[in-house]
Length: 147
Image (cartoon, rainbow, N blue to C red; front, side):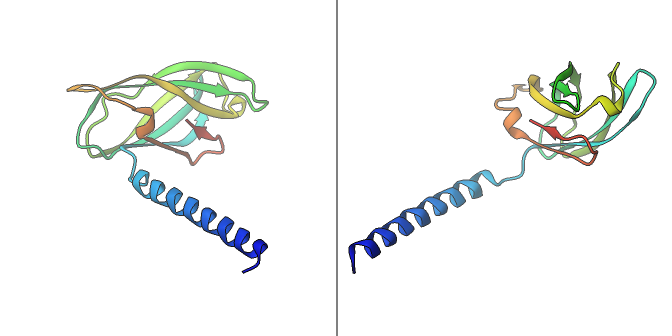
């Protein structure tokens, strides 16, 4: 086999190995998240924008404290508001809807919403480790919802 052919074969083998390793890591990490948060819809409210959050707790335990540090970015990307949202209690193996208000922010002034961090995440047995990593987030509204 000419030198160039061996080099190409080696490059393809290394690439195949890397892809297999990535696929294996994805399969291990591919288990469903403990909690799914869906920004379902936004609508005008009395104090600002009213938001509907669908929460699905797939865990076997309840969350007695579940506080999100949220940042609302305006459509131009500038931070418009930051606040802590308390979604607790979150029952085990339960899907529920929580409604909250983004005060002083009309819905058309919300360009995206970011979970900046978990302000508090606790079960009856104590603090829950790596809580943000346990979240899966999505948005059915026109406003992106990320972590």
